[in-house]
Length: 179
Image (cartoon, rainbow, N blue to C red):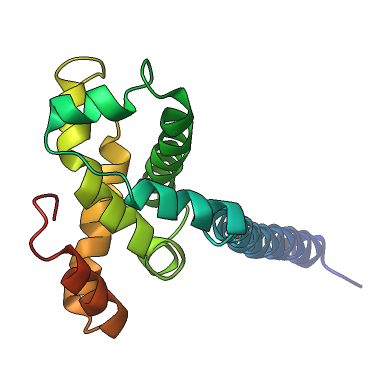
């Protein structure tokens, strides 16, 4: 006959094994969900930065020129040039959002670097003096801090790598007071 103590022990072992299997299954599902979320973020970023509309916007934004903060405000401020402001703000907010995703570890620096790193870093270099000027007047002191954070991370990664595309971009910016 089966001893009751053995039966109870087997029951406890079966229950513990079931809990362990459930925990393992949950961990695997959680890992897969995080991977799928990162893929979704990557696709969203790619759709933004690699679309024809974004590339056209980027060309228009890089063609902007000014001598100082006041000249910028006279040419491109939202009260003077709403169309330019809309294009610029769309880029600024996307870069800041990208910085937030990176800071929150929802995307990694390799993803940022390979999809939008060129735009993130060069746009920050171009607009940093303008954003800092607005931080003193119209923006809060922490406006676009996420963009600044990710631009610095991209810059560090670029310097750690020897990349010909980035060297070419550096040559374009040489002599510019914004780089």
